[in-house]
Image (cartoon, rainbow, N blue to C red):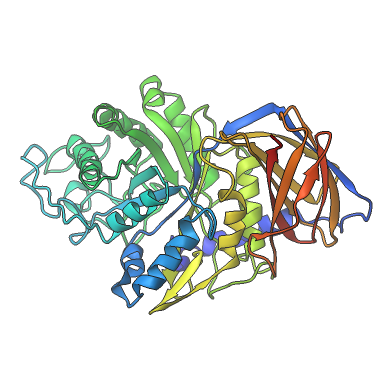
Length: 468
């Protein structure tokens, strides 16, 4: 989330950057196999958030012109000019200025006094922009309940939801009122033409901050999921939990949910962040899993592809690869798409100007051509420096992503087995210090194989189609 709160993550991020570095690639050609008979997880998509007023800035509250707004939206959402991101994570506000029920209606059993400004800090505008680009996955996530529903009377500084086990309040039990509050938020978006698919009732429940935050133990998360579940189901919403501060920490929440038969049936998606701990394996669940928030720590704006600082583009590419192939995640949701100052976001906004980080193009190397409902399929590579993944899209195309972590260019012969593609074309898109998803010369596929070169310290995304 906010960079000054992420010092804890710096060591983990730098560790990620060093973990897979090996000796330079051999000069001999490498071989790689893409095997359509070995299937892994289905992909829900790749996304971003513009929470805490960032959507307002993008919409021009600090001087960004309509033309520049369009350019930034293109960079984030266009499948030809940008990253083609396919998930938008929305922030369910809890402050007086952002909550849909800023004032206590008179207790948990009183008639709600909801208000709706049809803007939601410009998140409605951004959601409508995303929908126009074809996005149809919207994840609404609450950092906290309004303060009057909590043990500490404050929407910030932790505290717990009144009525949970171990969290009694003189004002009463607010669990059901909070569940109704969350579902009402989705109903307001439906009025604006946006269908929210997934609802999250907590964000980093194991981390207290001086801004919107609320604590849940794993047992309390299970308890509340069982309150929210029936109400959310009636509204057609899938429950997500628990957006823990770290991937290993999320395992504790996922294990608690899996151990409860009712909660296990309610929670459709297990969501975790990678600040306190990075991904070293899947979450302990058979349900869908999302890496639902991360950006690397840093104190300066960085546009580099490969500078070894831990928050360059290559670091992001490695993190996405690890999430997909080691964590088996169904979705990867970055933190800010665009923000201001020394942001670790993908784009830096400044008045009527903006700058683009290589982090955007690292994510684009996966998100542009790996589309929702694609299936990850098996890959092997003879060169340990070649970080390879492959995906079969529902339109019949294959996307193969090759990240060369070595210091030498790598000529690779790819064998496409059990894919249904024996002849056709593989169009490479290069991302490195000089390229931003730059289209390269098309390689011809013959006999189910093709050969192409992956430059040193580079990401190449192949869009592969069968000849008709």
